[in-house]
Length: 298
DNA sequence: CACGATGTTCCCTG
DNA sequence: CCAGGGAACATCGT
Figure 1: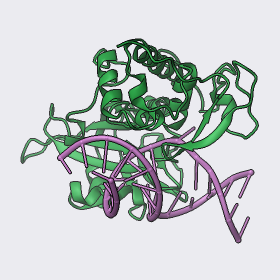
Figure 2: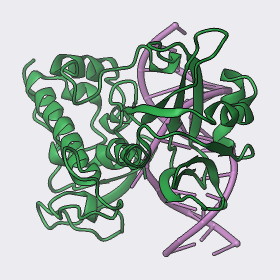
Figure 3: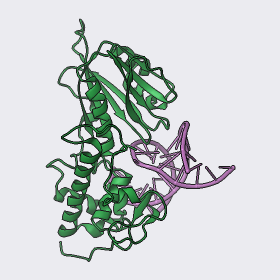
Figure 4: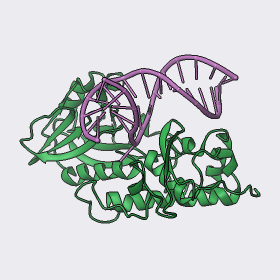
C-alpha cells in the first residue's frame, strides 16, 4: 500500500488522534519481524522501547519519503540530557496505522500499540516487511537516520539539473527502475512510478540515459511533482481534512484506477494497457500512448 | 495449489 | 568501488 501519500495519510491519522497526548503504556509484540533490526540500534530492543515510551508525550511528527517519524518528549531525567525519543516507522508493503478505542485488544499482526487517554494507536503489518526504529537523544538532536537525506521531490532542492544527473548516472537502467530508487525519488513506489511515466508518455523500459535531454528531463520532472502533489491532495487530504480511509475516489483520468486488473484500457487512448515486469516490478503502461521520445538536443 | 502483491536489502556479476 | 539484476524476506487473498 504505502507510497508517499499513503505514508502521509497514516502519519496524519496517528498525529491527529495523538498530538500532544501522553502515552500511558506501550505494548510491543516482540515477535513481529518489524523489530528485527531494533536491538542493534536500541539496546533492549522492543521491550526497552515500550518501557521508554510509557509516560512520553507525543510532540511532533513528519515523513522523509516513505519513512515516517514521531518524536516524544520524556519526563525530566536526573542523569544525562537525553529527553527526546524518536520513533521511526516504515510501512513496508502492508503496514498500516490505525486508531482504535482505549480497550482495543491486540490482534494478529499488530506490532505496536500506544495507549493514550481514550484511544489506542496501532501499527499493524501482516507481511512484516515494515520496520520500527527508535533513537533517544537530547532535545534538538536528530537521529542518524534523519541525516543526509535526499531532497524531497516537492522541495526546491529537487531540481531538473539534479534529475538529469541521476538519469545520466544510471543511464543504462530502465527509467522505471531508477524512479523506484529512494535515494533519488523518496516516496515514489510502484504505482506512482507507473503514473509518472504514463503522464509523461515515456515507455517504462526506456533507458534513463535516453531521457537526459533538457526538454525531456524537464517534462519528467514536472510529472514527478504533479503526481506527488495530486496523490497528497487526493489520498492524504493535503491542506484540508484527512479522508476517513484510503478508499478515496481516485479520478478515472489517472492510470491508477485502470492498472490493476488485466484487460484495463488506457484513459487517454482507450487502447489496452500492458502489464509486464520491468525493473523487477510489475509495470502497467499504455503502449499506444507511451512512445519513445525523439532524440533531442541537450 | 500456484501466483502475485503500492518495499528493501543483500549478494552476485561485469 | 560502481551499476545493474535477481533472489529473499513472510503472509494473505484470488
